[in-house]
Amino acid sequence: MTEELNMIYSEFRESNKKTIDHFEVELVKIRAGKATPSMLQTVVVDYYGSPTPLNQVANIATMDARTLTVQPWEKAMLDPIMKGIINANLGFAPQNNGEVLIISVPPLTEERRKELVKRAKSEAEHAKVGIRNHRKDAMDMVKSLKEDGLSEDMQKDAENEIQNITNAYSAQVDDILAAKEKDIMTI
Image (cartoon, rainbow, N blue to C red; front, side):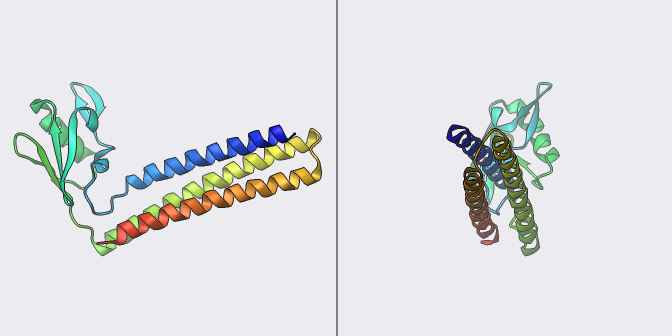
């Protein structure tokens, strides 16, 4: 029986780890005012008829805290990359100098910062809902083991362990959110 319980714990941890990873990816998409190449992670470019991620047709770099540069590997790609950035609806207006695209990242207003914090909190809540759903699944697996002969004491211990794991992952979400919130609100 303990082997089955350990398997449940392991699956539960793995599911929660994936939820945390997804949460972190979603937070990267929320910009904090500083220019980072990951801001253009969602941009898709029409590369000779096929949609291609921007990072596969150009080099993205930061010139300074407020400026991104996009250096295409082929000069013919400047216009399609520019269209891709505009179509991604990120609020950027790239400038074409014939060699590279220069993107000035506008500073965030206080109101916009608060909106971004709300969005980050929403993503955190989605992550916590995911963790709670995983907890429910793990609890259901423990209950099914009870029908197979798991003692009541072992069931209670397993449920406590699952709750402790849940609390740890929820705390991790809160920590990640607090760091992102601080990052967003720092001017």
